[in-house]
Length: 217
Image (cartoon, rainbow, N blue to C red; front, top):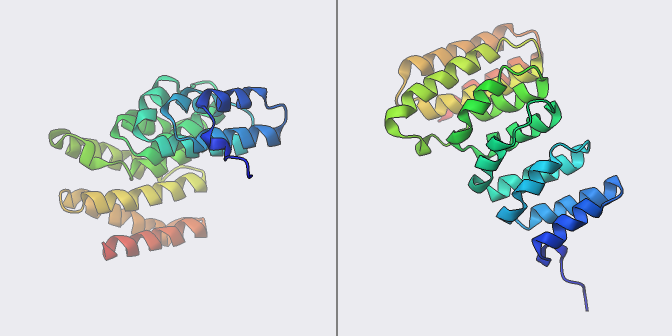
């Protein structure tokens, strides 16, 4: 008889397995099992794992937090580590992927962070927030704040951050097109400028693709 999958084990047992792991490979396996449980009670441990010096485990923890979704947002916001830039970058990535508007302030702050990895994750996530969850009377001003942040971020000295900002602008343009014609036009103008003038071919090519996708939508 085959053994039952590890994800059927109690969450406490899965957490204990993470704590007992004494090698990078065992830790990665344990984190994957914990993430696969998709249990809200695993959120604190998954957030703790973001601060481990193990990128593979952090990726698995982020995936687990994304699967859990909205219930992970408040713990993430409460436990953001301002001193561990690696952990902060992973947390920002999780908030960006979940897309909950409650993370808006942290994403805007993250777009100007000292750490490149934090700026990149924040820029990518800003354009893909779930705007339908924002109160209608607050939505317009929040979108314009995001627009201003992303336009500034397209001037970042690091090309990977500018690339992420282009992706964010693409998603934002599609979201605001029916409501903010002036903002929509500002995005198109900036993307066209990046397509023609950015020093990094990858950024220019992504700006061209963004324009195409915006027009398709």
